[in-house]
Length: 115
Length: 111
Image (cartoon, rainbow over all chains, first blue to last red; front, side, top):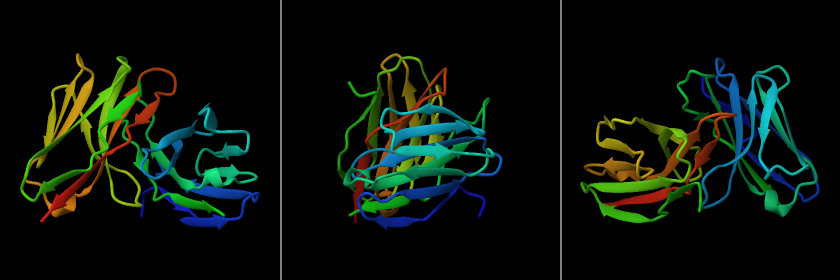
């Protein structure tokens, strides 16, 4: 499968615990995005990488959230001291760099439940 | 005003019907437009890009109206398998080329 992959697919954690999610983009895609989606909403942008550089972070991304893409390949998203409001689907997407095409391809997501 | 606005629906239509969704965007500098389809508890999947001249892919037709800042998706001869949420996506120019998703329009095709 040459699509975007994410691990784990589901995560249940207790409030206050730290969690880490992984995303492996399509191999030739150097742009990688993280989104959060809650029920009844569209995906909300969290952060974005071009190769290993994190170029943009949303105001939604509090200081409890950190993302890395150390070698410009896979990326991790860590949430420290989880809160119940962090429960959501966390989606990763990737795409080619300019000049395009600009379509993003999504992974299956990691569904986080904070109890 | 939201950057990308969609009617959340649901749109309940019988099989074989034609249904149209609109999406409006607020940033006149937006460069690229897409429709994604999302099934329940699944990831969004690209349905089609939207080109200035309009484009068609089988039963699906997408249109862009830059003057009025809206895009549309027309589905002809609806199938049960078309039941899903359709997300409007807009990419702006410059910087990191921000991508904004609408809330999605839910379509339910009824036998």
